[in-house]
Image (cartoon, rainbow, N blue to C red; front, top):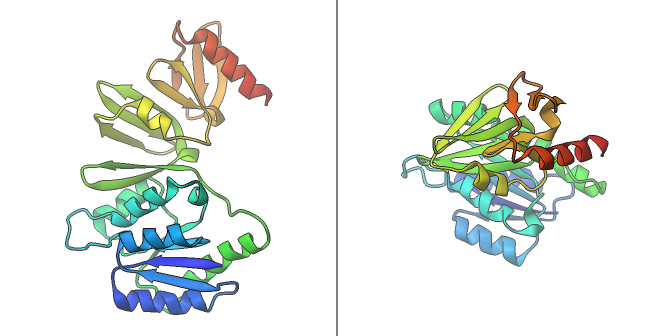
Length: 246
């Protein structure tokens, strides 16, 4: 198995390289300080796992270059489902923000004796060796005001446009992104099924509790009620009934 480490600090890179090299099934470990070098390596050689620091340029305000690297990697078919573990220092607003958008696939620095890192890596590589793909949660990366968001689709109940702002309604939170369309956000979703009961609103099929076609209303599992628009009624009904049967 090949593992790529992207970390700006030399001592952390060396510590991570030592830990990863000791894991069962690891053949080669590639370490990089710069995103461009890491990306070139990932294009030249197949990587089975990425370990990424989120903050690669600590001198830059609101730096999230590790997330940007992850986003660029996901554009390639080869790496759409490749496991990524974020290893970073998260403090104050950054930590709360990532928790709020359900980005919990990370390990906090300091890494200590490395046992936690080793456990994560061996669990992922063990699943690959057994011929199974690790459970993959679809997410969409968003960027607003210099901050990176990772929005997991299995937490999105529905999203909509209101006065030019994208509102993403999560299981236990809500995200607002000004000047961002629901249509554009939907175009970035490839696995999770969303239906459109009314123009500008997309509902997660997995969160639909029931549909009242007589009164043209969709009842969501979080108790939200979404109207069904006249122009969308026929198509929504066909898509919903097709989803319910499958």
